[in-house]
Length: 268
Image (cartoon, rainbow, N blue to C red; front, side, top):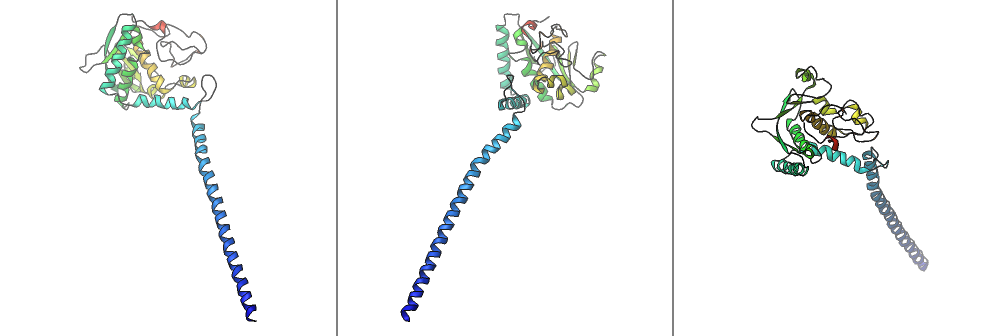
């Protein structure tokens, strides 16, 4: 009878050991499964986030009809460049490059001094001043016609670029409209409404706000240099619009363009 009890106890002990061993193995297996699932989720989440980000940034097609994330990034960089303050060193470098371009043009070189002013509540005048300077002295712009520009520090200037509230536009001349920018004598007046929002036709045809700002500066200063509206018309559908075409009103099938064409590289 004693041996019978021992046998029972031994069997019970073996059963308990087996249950404990099996339970531990099951726990390890479940742990591996959870780790594996967690690893898959971690590796797939960044890919999903990247797709979401690309989906939001691929808002437009390239000219060849293929989508590119670079399009949105380039536009964003373009806007950032417009609002980044220019240091004195950067201005000096831009002016030096403009002088090189002007000297290489083969045309008579001219240096214009200009002043910057505002009229009404128009926001940050420093950003306007920087955009004017970088636009006028771009190697893609009027320096190709032998012209460079220096912002005056003593009030002596050949022209004044004014960022004005729309309500004051007609005060410069009856010919100025509250809807657009204009030039009156030595005054180049940029309408702040257009400065802040461009025009519907420009944006609908692929232009950006940063490019519009450069266009309106170059166009209105072009009047000061002797050019007139629509002296050259659109060469054909999809061709770059002449700078002096009234692009704010109608692109006439041309593509937006903020720089003078080769045929516009002259000063009157």
